[in-house]
Length: 423
Image 1 (cartoon, helix red, strand yellow):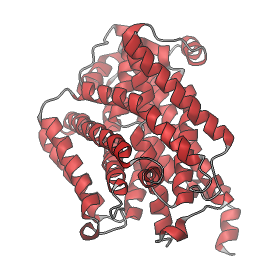
Image 2 (image 1 turned 45 degrees about the vertical axis):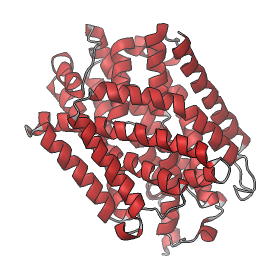
Image 3 (image 1 turned 30 degrees about the vertical axis):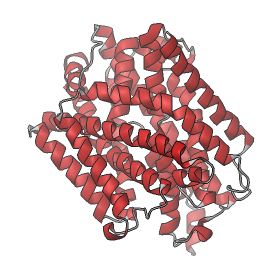
């Protein structure tokens, strides 16, 4: 029996074989930054923002699919494609903002991971910060893309910890379902700031760059080493990526939903709304939801941190090197892509510096999400311009429904950011 025939007769096996860049990108959205932001939203507003998980899922899916299509049909990463249509100075501003935001987020993520690791092992959080950062940077520099992708896909399983934790808290489903399906707008500046932060961490700029760049890495892994060989995509390739992105974004938003729910049922219900670090969240869960729930929350922090730090550092490296047309890619050796790996090393090292500067990690994560919420809509406009360009998109522009969804997302995020500043 041929290999193609075997795959055809095993739809389950084929389904899991399709899960790749879309699943990893979607899961990485629930990094310690996302967990912190969703925890703050749940602690301060209760179940009032549960509805955002279902609103953001299709919007996030359309955006990630548009970025995937750009990578698949142009043969370039997102920054490389933007460079074809945007002034260099404008792209440089956007990429610099991305680098700063990602570096702060790496530092705050490392702090959250090391605090969680200390709770689990008793080892000093400072020692763990160096161990985590060094391990991730070395793995990205000396492991192949296939090895990195294999590990990242398995680390997505850590996110199930948050789904289980919510059920342990024993929610009253009537009220939960009401707040899930009957949207309520936030009240006042703090409420709108929470909404902008949730949107900013769910629809985050680094995801756009990573998704497109991983399409290039996937094609290189198939032997398409030149730009000409990567241009264009078959209908089946695009359809397969739609499944991958759809599953990844649904999984991401499902986990987001349960993180908000867990902290709403525990912290908000007991008026514990002032969150300063991830250790505080985990320790607060112990008397409210039990040691098992607190342990799952803590384990999840370490697992998703190991998933997302390579993606944060990698997306910065792709964006910078593509902007200046330098050699890039996880398939290259360190000596042949010095600037690419230099950005990875520098952003990780600066992230460690953020930890040792004793900046409040939970607040740094939250404000990084707010910055992303303001930056994202402008990047979405650029992505929309590229996706409509028939020449650059090899006569395979994004469908009109995708364009409408992405344009609507940009408008919603601009309106939410404006409301935050006005109110």
